[in-house]
Structure formats: structure tokens, C-alpha cells
Amino acid sequence: MLDTENYAVILRSEAETLNLGADLATHINAPLIIWLQGDLGAGKTTLTRGLLLALGHHGAVKSPTYNIVESYSFAQFNVNHFDLYRFQTPEEWLDAGLDELIDSNSISLIEWPLQGEGYVPEPDIILNMMTIAQGRQVQFIAVSDHGKQTLAPIIK
Ligand SMILES: Nc1ncnc2c1ncn2[C@@H]1O[C@H](COP(=O)(O)OP(=O)(O)OP(=O)(O)O)[C@@H](O)[C@H]1O
Ligand SMILES: [Mg+2]
Image (cartoon, rainbow, N blue to C red; front, side, top):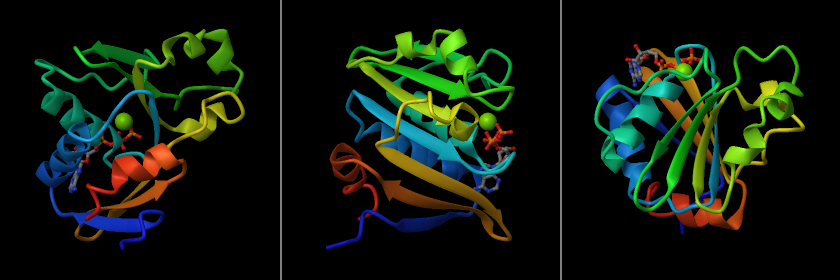
């Protein structure tokens, strides 16, 4: 039995990051909260783009750095893509009314979640992304039981 609580993979190209997002897309069910952590350029938006394209989104996936959130609706659920990088204080999560977007029918991917620490919803899954010589490394952490069930087929 694999340890789904702590597992890492190396992504050697942008295409591999997109593929991981696509793989995630086939295993997610609402409600789900995924924290995407890692430095600028670590691949958080790229992974989200792979997930959205695999779900059937056509067109651009804008980085929500300026708008804080971009939402996408699909037949099975809505996907909210947050980027809290520009928060000055964590309370901005409340001020912006972002809780309203989190419901039983939503999947939320949150870049820079600690910028909203204390207000942002707790994760089912944390993906820690890192730039390394070979490309990117992703560490998977399943926090909740739902997170574990979601990751189990992905990190086989
Ligand atoms: N596995 C990979 N190997 C090499 N380059 C990659 C890989 N995955 C993504 N990239 C590239 O990294 C760059 C930055 O990616 P991305 O915008 O997804 O980062 P980010 O983590 O969202 O950064 P930010 O915190 O600034 O929003 C993009 O040019 C993308 O093509
Ligand atoms: Mg980004």
C-alpha cells in the first residue's frame, strides 16, 4: 500500500505538469479544496490549466493574480481558481466575499493559500511545487480522508 500522505513526483516539462493536472481532473469530486504551494513560477497555474483543459474548458486560463479568482462552471461541478499572492492581509479573504464561492458543488484550487491564513478554507490536499534542475517537483499531501481517496489512484 502506497503512502498517500507524503509522495513526490518529478515533472520534466510543462507538458508533464499539464498532464498531472489532467490526471487530477479525472479523479476529483466536489466539494474539494486543494492548496497549491510553491515559489513564483513553480507551475501552480500550469497544473490548474491542465486540469481545466481536461475538464473541457476551451480557451485561455488566466492567472488570477490580479482578479484573485477565476471561476469555471462544468456539468458536474464548478472550479474556482484562486491566487492570493496580492493579499496585503489575510482578512481580505472575507472582505472580498470569497467564502460565497466555496460550496458543496465546488472544487477550489488556491495559489498562495497562506496569504489568507486563518480565513482560507482548510485543504483536503496540499500540493507543494518546487523548481529543480530537472524541471519541477511536486509533493502530495493528503490532509483529509476525501483528499486521500482522491490521490490514491493518482500516485499509484
Ligand atoms: N515541469 C516543468 N518544467 C519546466 N517548466 C515548467 C514546468 N511546469 C511549468 N513550467 C513553466 O513554468 C512557468 C511558470 O509556471 P506557472 O505560471 O504555472 O507558475 P506559478 O506557480 O503559477 O507561479 P506564480 O506564483 O507566479 O503564479 C511557465 O512558463 C511554465 O511553462
Ligand atoms: Mg500562478
